[in-house]
Length: 166
Image 1 (cartoon, one colour):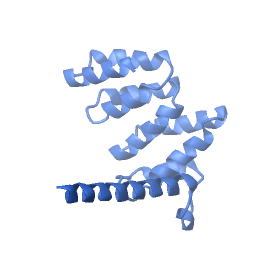
Image 2 (cartoon, rainbow, N blue to C red):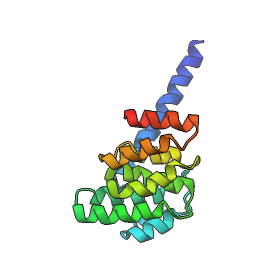
Image 3 (cartoon, helix red, strand yellow):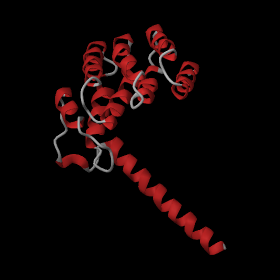
């Protein structure tokens, strides 16, 4: 019995070390140096449109890094937000839209609310829209959530109530 516990602990420690090494490489900009990182949001959004997640996560990291680099500049933040909100109306993959909603959670303002509000009423995108709306510090975001309560099923209503509590 002790042998198996030791093995599980060893495997867990190796997995933890590998995860930490991967995270460190992502945050320090290490070994991904051979590929050109897009500096244009249109190009980044084009690359992420068909993104399906998994190990090939460069499109996600490019988007994240682009947004984080511009979040403190009001002019760049607004321009970025406008393009991200417009992207939500495209035929991009659900995972791509999820990645965009994660960024709108960081930089979203009342300007993002109409695009997210449309997504609240669709079963496939309701959760990711709520995720973004929860952190937008505006009455419009709260109004969108409240307005969706009367238009959704019981399961979605529970989620919206949780988001309102956030």
